[in-house]
Length: 390
Image (tube, rainbow, N blue to C red; front, side):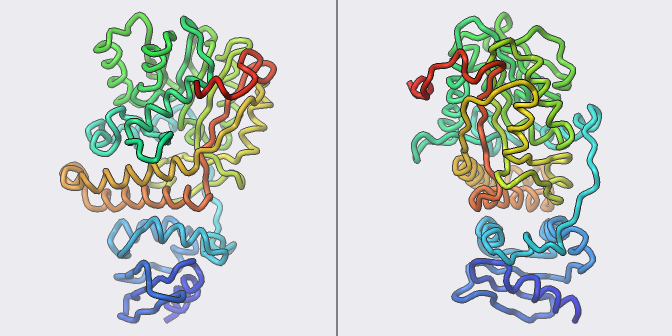
C-alpha cells in the first residue's frame, strides 16, 4: 500500500502528456487530460528504496528485466518527463550524487572496451556504411544517414581551413572515416588514436586496403601518452564525454600540447548548456565513467589551456535525428541482433537510443562543436564563416 501511494505521487505529475499506468495489482490510472499516448505497465513493484537510491538506475533496470513494460514511444515518454517541471527528473529528493568515478588510464581502457568492443559486426547492423558513431549533419532533410555522416566529416575538416601536406591528429578516431577522408580528399598527413582494439584493427586494415600507409597511421594507446611532434590540426569527436569531470582540464591541456603554434582544433561533443551532469543508468550500463560537461565548463578549460575560441555551433537537432535513425535501424535488424545479444541487452539498447533522442529533443543535452586555436582566435582562418560552406 505504501509503495502504491509513493508511485501515485511520483507519477501523477511527471509527464506533460496523458499517460496510462497499469499497476502490479491490476489497478489502472490515467495521469493527464485526454487519451493516453503511452502506457506503462508494472509487472511488479520496483522497491521504493531502489527508486530513492537512484531512480534512473532502478527504473532502467526494471525495464531491461521486463518488470516494467512500455506500450508506445519511449522517446515520447522520456521527453514528456523532461518537459514536466514537476517530473521526478527534477525532484530534489530523488537526486543522488553518484560515487566518485575513476578515470585512470586503466579504467579508461576498461570503459572503452565495455562499449566499443561489443564487436564491429554488431555496430555494422545499425550504423551507416561509414561506421560513424557520432552526431550526423543533415544539410538537407532527406539526406540519408550515410550522406549526413559524410557531411559532418567534411564540415569538421572544412572548419579547420586545411592546407595540403599539413598534419592532423584525430583523438578518439573511431573507425577512421574522418582521418582517412582528411587524407584522401584534403591531402593531409593524418594520425588517429583509440583505446578500442576492435577499432584499431579496423582502421589499420582500412589504411592498408586503401594504400594510405605513407599518409596515415593509427595508434592503440591512451590519448595522454602519445609521443609525437606537434600537429597543425586536431579533431576530436565524441571524446570528452568519456574523460571524466576531473580530467577535462587534462584533456584540453593535452590538445594544446599536441597543437602547433597557431594550430587549429575542432572539438565536437555532447555538452549540457545548463551545466555538467551524470546519469546513473547510462553510467552503469552504457558508458561507464561518462560525464556530460557544461558549456561554461568546457569554455573555461579551453581558455585555461592557453587556447581561444573562434566559433561555436550547436547540433542538438541533428543528434536527435541521428539517434532516431539509429533506433529505426536497430529495430529493423532485431532478428540478427537477437542472434548476438539476449533480450535484456536488446531492451537496454533500445532504451538507450530512444532516451538519448528524447534528451536531445527536450534540450536536456546538446551537441556542440568548438573551433579553437592555439594563439589569437582564428589567426590563420578567414574572417567570416563563408569558407566553411564553399
